[in-house]
Length: 400
Image 1 (tube, rainbow, N blue to C red):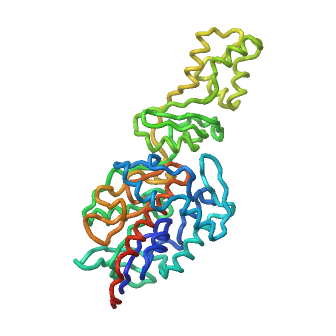
Image 2 (image 1 turned 135 degrees about the vertical axis):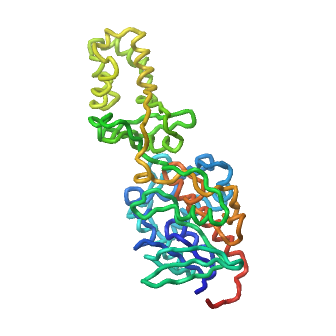
Image 3 (image 1 turned 45 degrees about the vertical axis):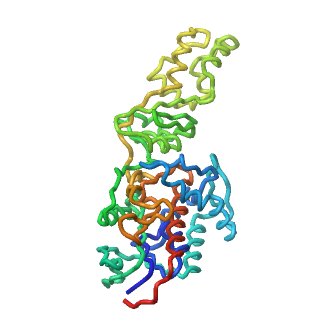
């Protein structure tokens, strides 16, 4: 059978592309329902974009690559689409936008847009061999027990990366891209919790506090969460994209607080107060108790020398922690790395190696910050590819 455009993957990028590519298109996915990552994202409310989208908040070998697509389909464009469907939303912190209701509203919106564009959707479909015969792409699939070969003029890879394999994530896009001559940059889990030696933070599991986490490449001030395995929370997920094995990270447990000045003032005004009691005004009690095992917190404020205050200020402002690793793709929100952007047009997302092949979304070596950035990249890259295909003359109708 023939379809003008075949899209592999019915996630955020795949469905968005189907809504914009024009002509006859078919979307394939192995799952029972489309947009599964959308459905579970943001605690079921989908953090669908961010008000503060900027190219410098995306990682990749070529930091300039995402600029074109992000500029031509912005967060405001997606907000217009959400508004047309009457989907109520709210801003949380740092420009993050979430649905007031369920994330399935976004999935339903995209399905409606696909249907309006005349796109078809095949679910529970297994993708087999992919090749090009010199004129068309030929993709073998298995559906409802039948083997089918689909011919297409345009092939869009939108199968994502390796994150959350329990939902069926694989490296399929990388395999197909590599088959057609593309290089793949190193892939690794991103936006992922850190792990530490067994039992390191077990007694702190569930404790959260504001923090500033940094390394030589980046710094983020957001919540930190202690877990049975190690550290999580927005600040940790953010810095994980910039971290490499063997490195330590610096944790400032009291960002925005001049601890040295505070302790000196309290030493003069309330010297009989215990140091640990004063720290508990700024940090969770359980965390203070934990820190007592690593730092001398004994005594009253009146007993503190300036030297000891400075040492304590330095320790709590630069707590050096070296993770043993991360929780891996199992819990990673996205995949860092992917199809090398040197082989892709930044304007159209089309392959420079073979005409008609487009690579979009998480499969590309473009990874955004936590907070709606990766969804916006899915929307923007998908629209870039879809519009490029739509602008091409529609070929005469052909039979398979």
